[in-house]
Image: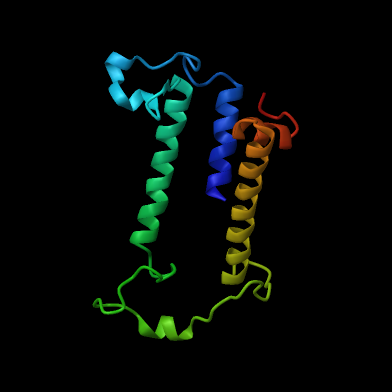
Length: 148
């Protein structure tokens, strides 16, 4: 869900001119190879700002995965580490493809939420690739032109 909020906020910023000098190409002397895409094209200021913001969100998500709270999924935790809760592992059951849906803030509802968010991202990226349209423009189009 957080990823969708961030993508919509990025589209809003682009649509309302909140990204300074969006079409300006980064200076190669100032930025060096960081300013290039595959060594051929140079990034625009807009793409560089969106890239850095996405890297930040990616790192927050990565840290949440590597350093989970006690209520998080123990997938990447070392079962031999001190403090590992084997009772939680024994009591947790695999959800399968379609878990039984329960209303409210339940683990099953969170599984559905995560799966639907991933299907949405796959759909947006696929549609963007097929129609050769930028992802932010696809999001704006699907939201009825709400951003620009």
